Image 1: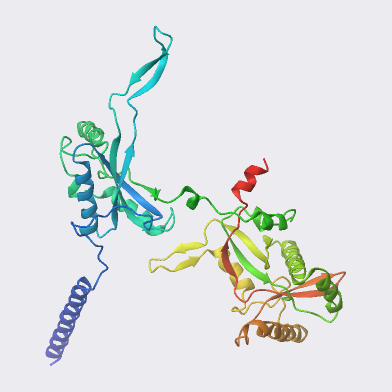
Image 2: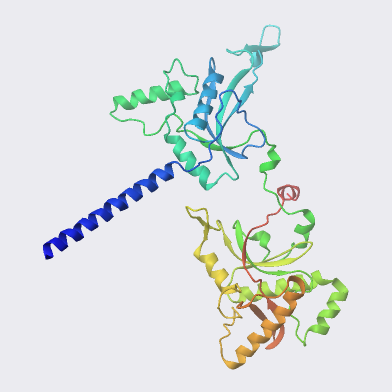
Length: 412
């Protein structure tokens, strides 16, 4: 009875396993038939490069001589049909004059003329792949590695039949490697590289700097964001006019400043005081002022984070620390610099600051969501509270503004 029961259980388990494998097989088969965005590959259509492509692409190979255009077009279609990659063809013409001045003079005292071995213009066709926003685009770099290993049928031709540039050199290298008992580990497009769209103007790729007026505003600032060496920083506070939390002790003084310089003066002062206070507590803080607002940022980073396979960006540990310390969504001390706790006195200060912040924020943006813990920094002068400065609800990673290149050259 026990044996039969055991066999019955084993049979049931086997049935479940078979059923599970069938389900898994069916799911795998289903995935194969899921709709995938297919790149167009019509032999009757021309896929010439345009200004709308890119702005960054992968230059896979170039072709010249007899049959060059046809072979380039064949490779473009194979990229699209076989590898499902958007590929384009770009024609380049290199002019060569019939004669050129050489060294020395002839018997008449005129410069000696030399003639190029190949007269006239020389035409080449390049095959480019992809539409990438930046030169270091993660997807672009991954595709570039794959292209270096690909062996398209369009390039599997004898040296005398192919029009691919440097094909003879690669054939000679393969022969030498074979004699040495080695072999090439990469395909015929191993020299592929990322390049910019040649149809776009050069100014498109020149880094845009701040204008002269904004640069003048930030001139002489000790910890200016323009001096930050990294590409990214985290904005923790933004001041637009009347954005500071008023206290009864500083209202009259600040009202006088408003009359003399307007809200932007108070905003700039607010940003400056917060930057100094953050620096006192060993935070790498920067301030930046423009026509409309003043901001304070923390940190200097070359990259904002790493990209996950699903496309999301995971911030670096340094950036995450700043966001948690100064973001209102986290239950960290309300005053990040002085670590206000939950005793009765500090709880009262925290609640008062929250009410003041909610009133100020709601007047411009609506009611504050519950369970937020907005952060603020107290500015003291001779142990007296000068003002309470609010931080942004959500710290944000921003690109660091840079000085204009043209302005830099003009000042030299």
